[in-house]
Image (cartoon, chains in turn yellow, blue):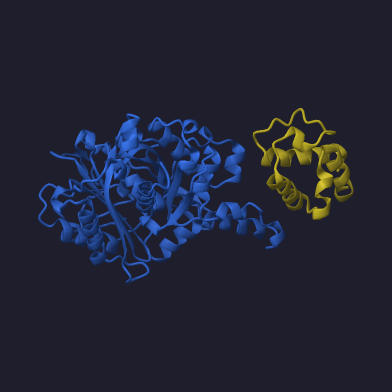
Length: 81
Length: 415
């Protein structure tokens, strides 16, 4: 997947787990939690959806690496290439 | 009637509900008087085509999409009904002490829907439990529907559900009465909810018991007391009442639907499924005694009858034991319109009858084309509404599996 495709995959997941949020102006460099009303349950949703949709298993120690869109795309790239 | 202090008398001041044939009391009562069924064709995973009572309330009225996704259907029903009840009672929740508000909801079961969903999800991944959702726990804890009300309305008083099979709606009301009398809360949101139509298991189980209704015309499928009845129509729904002490209701000039003057619960201790007319008789008698009234004082009996052969006959037997010589006690059934709303059944059926205090009309049992001789009883109101001379006391029956009976008696409030 290209970076743009990975980004869109994450956007799709976010729009499912947080359907009331406007994701059109998401700042890729800023933390998700500063822009979206996400709590720990939502973060676990992101992890679960990545596992379900792309068979990506993210160890708990790496959850913190998915704090921004840019970091998430960077983290996922080797798993989704 | 018993003479109690106003601080010990508990009154109904607001009603919020969703039923298969109405999303507020006005719509619902109109449907009952117009003999309008809410049963429709329904298809559910694994089980396939069947019939059900489906509610069509606007879940987004009081929740956003994320809340709905995160919670349960029972939670959404509960939140909708709670808001509607508060609005009906003209209570602004922001102006009351939220630590003194209690939420008590009856449920027949809870968690089957969510567990079936998760099992279906992991079946897509070779039953690997790594794909099981973290939402399963908060969705399936037994207090979920009541807890979702507290989360939505920021209520910090006590909340819990009461598991009481199909006697649960009445049990929720009884719990509310008791907590108000004990001073454990100043306002109770009490009633019952059900999301059971979203679990295929309940349809499959009733079918296995040969107790699931079938009919070419869905609106005629739920037919208690009819000779050709063939079982239960499963429904979802909910009703939440605002209960207050009469002293508090008077102080704020609240509209009063009626007063819960008595109640009783007991156990059959005889069978997992089959009802017991003797214990039902005892439960009704105990409720009348606790109310300080005699059978002759009851104007309307709202029956539990679910359209199973044995269930209907046993309840009629019990009614004959209690109301044998009562010339002005009328008997009706609301499941004939809405099916069996499980944990919500008792409170929905009672709510449908409460407007009779104002209009003196007893809504009929519909779909009785050929009355089962074993279900014959004096003053059974069948197929057409009945104008009655007096509508001041309603006795509401709700019975459930494992042998649990509940009766609530409501009196018209006369200043």
